[in-house]
Length: 108
Image 1 (cartoon, rainbow, N blue to C red):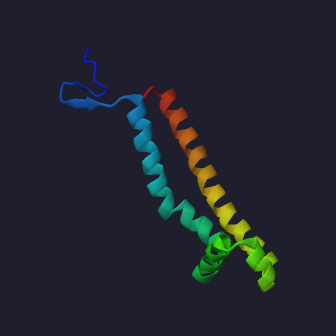
Image 2: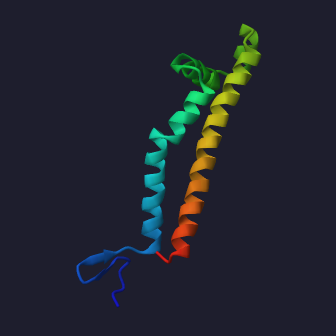
């Protein structure tokens, strides 16, 4: 039995479990960008201008927003950006957990 992480069996290359999981995580992220994240983006932000405003408020200190009289708008836009990022991470982690448990169940 070879000691390297990748073994070959005949002409078929067999990856170790860790490499399979890394590939699956990268695939999930790319698939989610065009499907789930896009749908989530459209449901949270009405248009690109609102997203740009939300990102701008995320980088603006709260004290400056307070002096401009935009404190509560700043807070609401920061909440939207934070929820978008959090939901994207949670969705990816849940999908990864489901896929890895299914793969463990079928012994891949």
